[in-house]
Image (cartoon, rainbow, N blue to C red):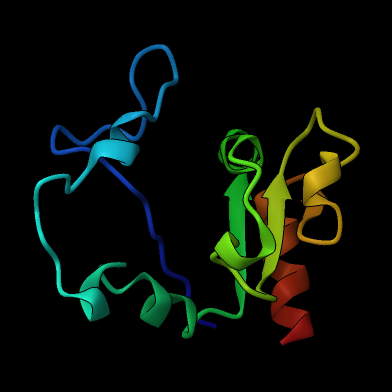
Length: 116
């Protein structure tokens, strides 16, 4: 089984500001004209190679807060598993888009390996 990590980080190597903000993501690349076919910087290509995405609760909550319309949802039908020991029910706008998992990551990986 192949595992890969895809993490949005700022130039200084952080994912979020000290207060948890990710506003920098919305301004990244401003002023840079990318050809239309490269606008997503390879994200669509990357997703086409992925069978399942695992993300943390805070990442999912950030995406949920964007309240993306179906045409702006970047993940298509990709299986998304969200790690959380506290969240028991997905936010309404994430229902049928994510699965919640609570427990050791090793257990999740073992389950996914068995599923193929």
